[in-house]
Image (tube, rainbow, N blue to C red; front, top):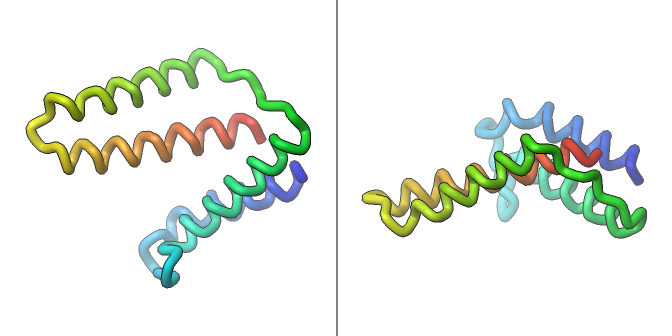
Length: 102
């Protein structure tokens, strides 16, 4: 299962530059499809093995920063732009954790 997850993560990394070249109906870009497949395979791998790699200090600091961005939604002048940025940071945090654990 780990080999499948690793191969899917390589496909995800290779598809990121092609993100806006092709749109798949109901899914979006190829990078999003690869990300969904990689995330699903990673979750299955974690459920089967029962192991998740312990986060490092960098992961904790990145999560704290993402939490700080989430809190800024309360006092921002442009809520929609802040929410878009927050979604991006959450996706990056999840991709960081996924790539760390594979």
